[in-house]
Image (cartoon, rainbow, N blue to C red; front, side, top):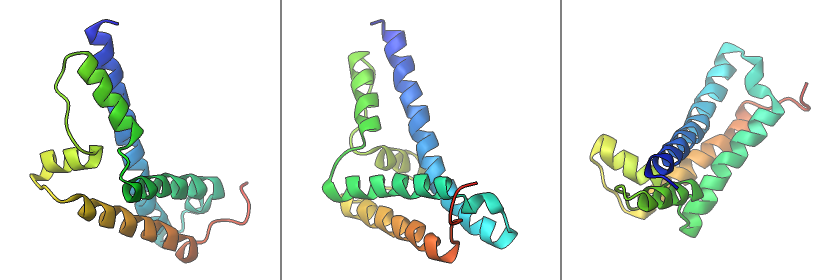
Length: 133
């Protein structure tokens, strides 16, 4: 497979990863903002289930010490293309690059768990509709 195609695939996975992270983070912000602004869509059951499952997946990976498959796949494609790869998880890498902050793995586990707890709490604070419309 040509190097440019491998890098294009790696960049596509990176974009999907960023979109996943945005869904998790912005989804929670939208739920709480929607509560105060009376947005009905934030109570949509399928949205809420997808959001809870997304952060649940991240929390379980963190607790088990598993690197996200998107990170692994992206790095494998970059390595096969002969490009630079990074160590650690996707979030650790980008937080380090954006904030020049390095933290032990347990800090990220704590952050993911706390965030996941906020998402779970949102089910009681901003109750989803009983059924999807």
